[in-house]
Length: 301
Image (cartoon, rainbow, N blue to C red):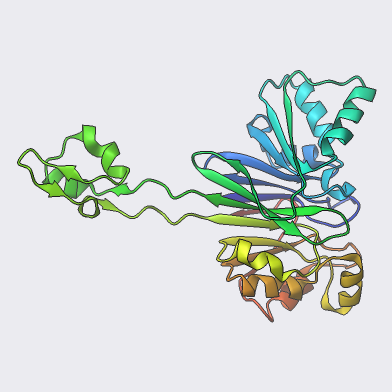
């Protein structure tokens, strides 16, 4: 699992900082999460292939989280894209994008599928044979979701020494990896546990964009491998965080601790601060495994 931060600062783009957007690579799939202004430029800078992005997840309809979307869609068309593009976001995202495309006479030569979200309960919005994606209902000034990306448990690993000792033909290997016991020619039944090792643990990633401190999300993200949680303010601006329905670094750390996350990544910093190191220092007073997101930074898990 690899996470590339394209932008992680609040409000407006600046010369050296970009609003929220990131790409999660999981099980050979590239998912774009939020699409603030300048996302397509950041994709190029980070050498991420446009053609491999088939699913875009928009947390909410504040500009610093989706103003780059129509530009990206238009660029895909100019580059001759033919693959379908699926967009998951709050109800209204389809109307906004289609209006922009219609008034500029810029229809795409590929299909756009909008999956509009309204539920205030966690729900599955994407699933294939390897990955499942659920919403994380958040509390912000407008309807907002985070997203939980989970690997599905993979195949069991073949113990080559064991299958060779039992002289098992290779044509049975896939059944063994699928968890089945094997009956030998002499009638003996060999338990799968004697022929395989456990699969790798499934990884998970929770993206929690703009939200006030909200313990309701803890059961949804419990034991998550990596949690990205907004930390717009430092503790000295806690009252402002509450007023604007954002979180402080310490509040993000409390969520990580209560959810038993393995790692916390902070982001969505207010640009009022001269640097971001204090965010890490404050969070580490509560939760130790803290990393700072920054534009262009990648994390591999």
